[in-house]
Image (cartoon, rainbow, N blue to C red; front, top):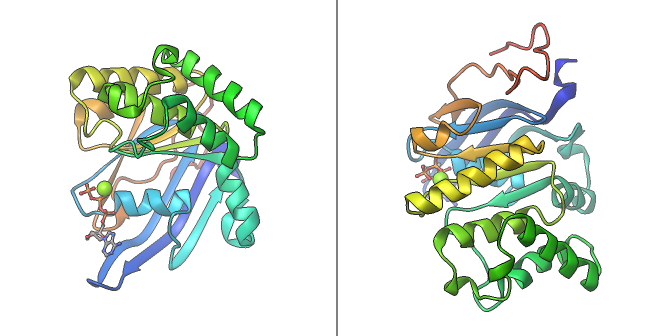
Length: 244
Ligand SMILES: Nc1ncnc2c1ncn2[C@@H]1O[C@H](COP(=O)(O)OP(=O)(O)OP(=O)(O)O)[C@@H](O)[C@H]1O
Ligand SMILES: [Mg+2]
C-alpha cells in the first residue's frame, strides 16, 4: 500500500457545528508522508483549524477516519488514543498559549511531565530542547519577557517535548513580525531537515514557500488533488500514489 510511508492519513473526515449550524469539514481526504513539510492554505472559515483540532484530538469528527503513524485512531479506546496522540502529535498555535506564570523551561517541562516523564527527566528534556533551539538564555524567563519569535520557539519546544512524529501548526507565524516569522520558519526548516513531519496552516504565500508541498482547502474540502507526493526525492514516489 502506498500509504505505508505516511504519518497521517485522513479519509472522508466530516465535522459540523450546531450553533450556528456550519458544515465545517465536508469530507476531507489528506495524506502526509513521513518527513514531508506541508503548508495548508485556504480562505478564512474553510475549515483549516477545525481539521487541525480533529487531528490533534481536541475535538471529535462526525464521520471519517484518521490514521496516525499507521494506527487507525477510531479503533482505539479513549486512553490508548490519548496516549497515541501524546506520543505522535505536537501542536503549535498562532497565539502560543504558553502558561504565563510559568517560565519557558517550566512550560516545556510540563508537557514532558504530562507525557509521562519523571520530574528530573522532564526538566532535563526541556533544557535540552531549549538549548537546541537556542533559547537556553531565556529558559528562566516568563513568556511575557520574551519576544514573539522566542515565545513561539518555546511553544514549538513544548510541542516537541514528547518527540512527536507529526508537528501540527496553526498559523504559527500569524502574530509575529517579520523577524519572528523568519526565526520560526528557520526552525521549522531545521526540524524538517532533521526528519520531522510538519503540517502548517498559513495565509501567507511567503510562509508557505518554506514548505515543500502546498495543499489548498476550500469549503471544508481539500481542493488540490491529494497526491500524497513526497516532499523530497529521497523517498521515491510510489506508483499510483495519485488519487483524488
Ligand atoms: N466551535 C465552533 N462552533 C461553531 N462554529 C464553528 C466552531 N469552530 C469553527 N466553526 C465554524 O466552522 C467553519 C470553519 O472554521 P475554522 O476555524 O476551521 O476555519 P479556518 O479555515 O481555520 O479559518 P481562519 O483562516 O479564519 O482561521 C467556520 O464557518 C467557523 O465559523
Ligand atoms: Mg483557523
